[in-house]
Image (cartoon, rainbow, N blue to C red; front, side, top):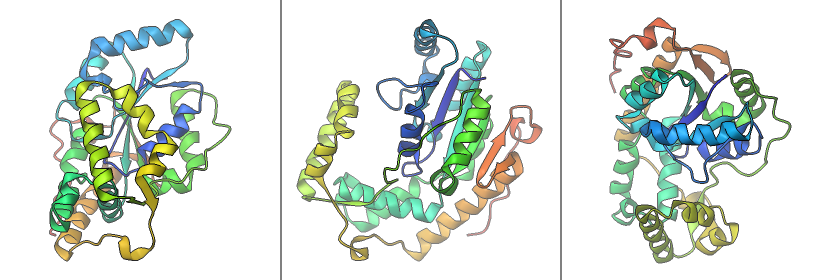
Length: 293
């Protein structure tokens, strides 16, 4: 049914969990690294698709590219692939804006990222700035692709229903098992300087092009035990200012309005927008009225 399944959404919205689910199914094929962003290069996509077709028909080429939700080149890249006749299903992940922000703050603290090292106010500003806005969601809905929108609660609490919808849309056999690993489990840095050093090394590996090596390191449980420890309690969890909560809530309201207005509900927290639906496909569609924070 589809040649390309592209998963987008802000970090800490369940992409790693969905990545594990899909990798366990023989009908979904992945590159060796996450965030391959095939939509940026039709040539790279054609080569990957050709290699996959040589192995046998019926597989969907998958790409979990979180940051693509904020990539201005996403609509243009999807349109280029569609013009070549490729069928695309774009999966947009949504999570309650407050929950995602708190989870991302803890994640960045545990890794000693620069925004966390600069203090709590800079960290809070960074995660609020990275939120999924209605404008970014409108750009996703304007792409020339079918869009399946999944809430974090549906993905993690009613996983079977989500997988049934994906299998039905992609024309694949159903999923026979679901991994039970924790989703977005909050951890703390074993030593802040050690986590910061690890983050800088990871950035250097990414910039130098050693992305496959970086992927293997990130997935190694022994490495994770060296760098991270479980949280001791709620005292270690971050908090949000009233101003940030108002801004996040306003964005959440606008995003919910847009999802309900542009897509058909096919399950609890599961929405499908087909390309032929007029409102979302209309290039003049400006999204919902912006709520007053």
